[in-house]
Length: 354
Image 1 (cartoon, rainbow, N blue to C red):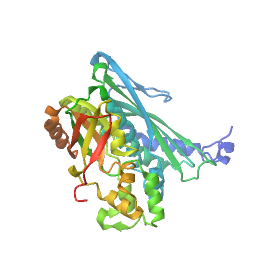
Image 2: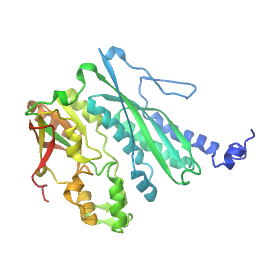
Image 3: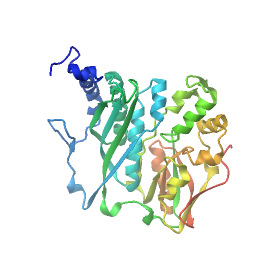
Image 4: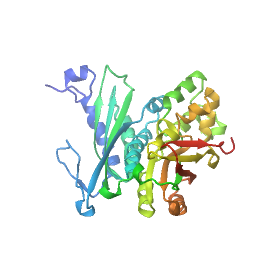
């Protein structure tokens, strides 16, 4: 079939798909992807698959871990703000920080972007963010797909998802079975709402008629920019912590909030008693609660409230764990203790400066 002047076949171009734009997007993203290369990668000349050699000499019993996720409706906010270079960091964080909960080191990721119309520069910005996230996580971006969906999506509309793979030694898999009474719960500070609760965020913004482009003094910046603050990537920090101290479990605090997610990392018969007075939620959470008239209960069951990752460590290693995280630039503090109970995480007290 003959190609038209844009490089796309005439019929396909008439249907709304621009092959040349897709090829240009690939060219623009190559320099971003190159930053994520790891020595285990194997070149696939065809480009149809990403190849990665597992270093079996490094492990006695290597177990592969995999995770997949998206960014949810935070993408809609990125479109409103016309800011596309950070949403990819969110994507990587949501995937790799699930992987490390098992104790796995993230090895590589693939991504999928669907859009109504391929704008090469915008796609390159998105992939640039994904590459930055992979760089922060220490994993390779080995492949991906960009699909143009004219008719089913508006020209400026897009969504993205990703999948990651990691590896953990068979006898080092972390989880509830390792948690013991007397363990210390360590909180790792969040950078913001991360990538959860944005349906409620948008409901608050619309209902209170908030201007995303307005400067909000209490937030220290423009509202939309604060809401687009990228998700903190904890993967390297968790891997380093596991190597330094006796970590029994992690919990990635995503949709559902702190208590619900941490409960997944507890065995039957043990509770995590968490003290609200050990931290002040980030200003964005107080702002959203006030502007949307949202109760504390609803806020805590939707947002991370400033705690993005939790580690459960042996009591003797608690101070060392805090030192490791602080040295790595991660805000961290004693959040609570593991006690006898029924397998729940329970928040007590009042927030600091509430």
